[in-house]
Length: 129
Image (cartoon, rainbow, N blue to C red; front, side):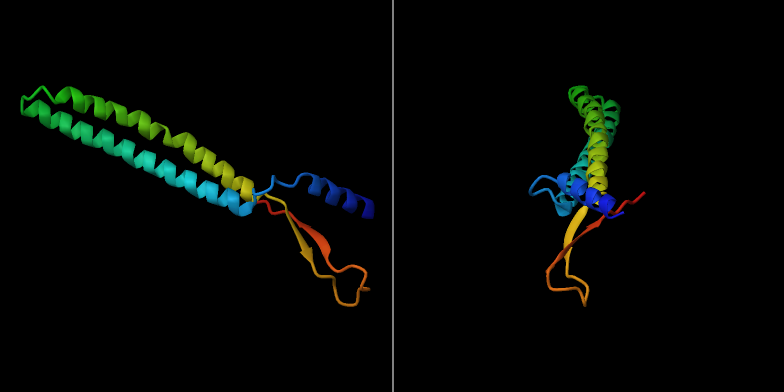
């Protein structure tokens, strides 16, 4: 049993994240990507709605010069809004990576333990579904 525990501890320490990529790094990256995705979605939706409303009003007023530009703006909003989907997926991936990250912490030894060990490494794994 002790051998299995030591093997798990060594295997876990071999899979430590790259330096500077902590749990907070992945949460911050997730928040940045989520903010970027919402911005793309709002801008793309605004382009589609604004272009459609302008295109319809330009057809009623018989000024055909601006209807082509408004149609391009309306149709251009769809790809802009569509690019928010992969960004949301990537943000979710970073958040899940932070949630499932293995945390190594040094715990103080329990009272009554000989003074040989000053700190004991402990492993915690957190998995959320």
